[in-house]
Length: 302
Image 1 (cartoon, rainbow, N blue to C red):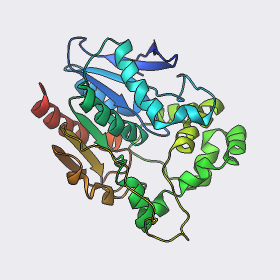
Image 2: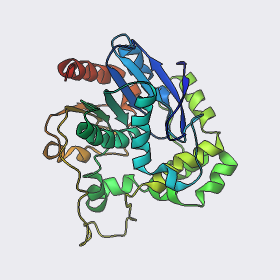
Image 3: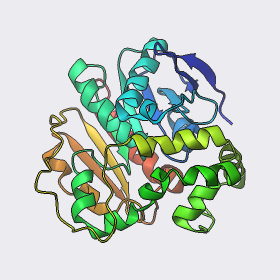
């Protein structure tokens, strides 16, 4: 297990954080997704921490980090704010953001904000849809909408009773059925995750990320077309160097999420990883680490 420190942010939120590597090296902030923790980055931190300052929080609502009550405390703007306040608390001015899944969704926002204030010179996204493209895909793409029906279960208040009785695993079983054990996950890591999911307060907070999201997920009977009054979210074009790593066997996020990215990002590198599922950072760590090495080396000093 990686050692963590407790960091209090200026907004009162407290995060448990891995902070390892040379203090004078370029900083990398790793953002995990659902239903995960800082441990999801174990292979990348081990690989990079001799050259970079590697920072990986348990994000708001997860494990021992602060779990404020109320859905309104889990809107994406607050998570984006946490990242900058974490950098402030650690005395870091500029940093590279690296995110997966929900952490990747937040990383998109951190990248756009950070390119405007000069604090984020580059970004890395692993299997996390772009906030401009994803809502449209949910309206028009049958595969993506079907894969995202679990949103509707997570947002259902009736799921709270499952959490109370069984922990997070009760909701996961309802949403996804009984999954086959992934042979690429170490037994001790599986045990640690199952222990984390027993925390009922954390489980509700984790579901609140979905409940606070503005993304609409319609049922499968709704038309596969954008509403007449719908408009793309007007985010500015991303100008900082950006690496997108995509596991091609992701059942939750099909590769169609890559379509159109080149129109929204000036300096875009896409690395497709065949034979890996959603959790590409530990399912295919060698491929991810190689992509990181190449990208970080090319953009160091930007």
